[in-house]
Length: 191
Ligand SMILES: [Zn+2]
Image 1 (cartoon, rainbow, N blue to C red):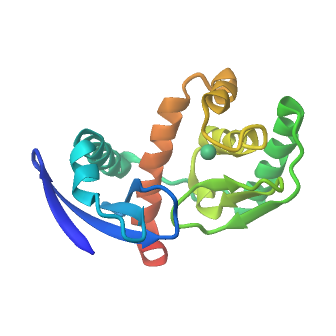
Image 2: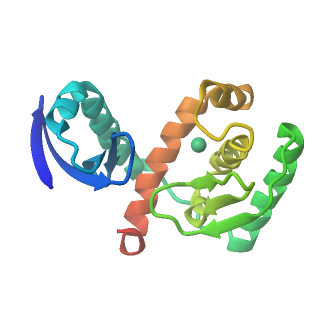
Image 3: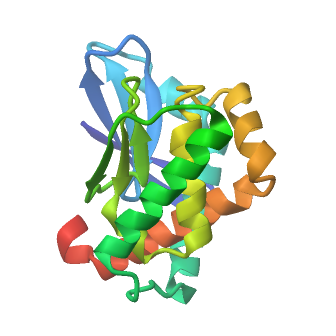
């Protein structure tokens, strides 16, 4: 079910997605707002109304990232093997630093995230990361491995990140800018 809401200068289209969840949540995907909510949820309008500020800010941030993505150049000099080797070296280094063990490393072309970490100690790295500057690759690997200590984005998790990357907020922003650059370059694969 799709609806529309006007927030200042924005015309926001949102979709209500019923799912087997306990609590509702809002997310933005491909420039669309999604409200994921339990079956039979009826407070859609109230939720949207109450989060107008957040929605507006998120949409504006997305717009800025999309524009800044045009200035970014992807790095096509790094081969797939070099990339995998780099990841393995980083995993080795951070295993010692964080005192954690990684079970397996998977490489996948993912459409919505740079990486993930499972409670079984496996980390998955998005293959598109290979076109990004090394400092961002380093950050992403560290971020995923820090999830072996703290699975969620808790305060404790960000403290671990901060200890190595005090400018992590900037880096996270860079990653979202590069995401738009990757999407633009590989539009036939990703969309
Ligand atoms: Zn994370």
